[in-house]
Image (cartoon, rainbow, N blue to C red; front, side):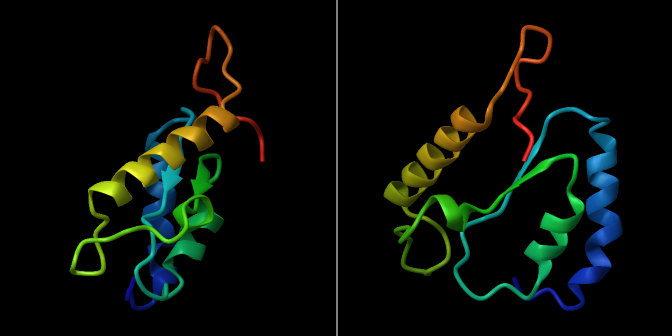
Length: 104
């Protein structure tokens, strides 16, 4: 997460979200392996109407490969389970919009 001048990413984040044209979406952060330089706050603050899911809030003590960065098999499974559980809790779909998410 060593991204110098993270605020320079605001336009890129907004442009990506604009391309979704109002479709339900979730921007999922990777589990942090070191301190964030501020880019996650830039994303969190500019991703609307998409939702932002901070992986560190839903999975703790993620087991990782020897590089200390990438999740190992158990870590990937725990992360995936946590994301799917979050989606199940947050989903408020209807017949016409099955993947609509609840409002924050």
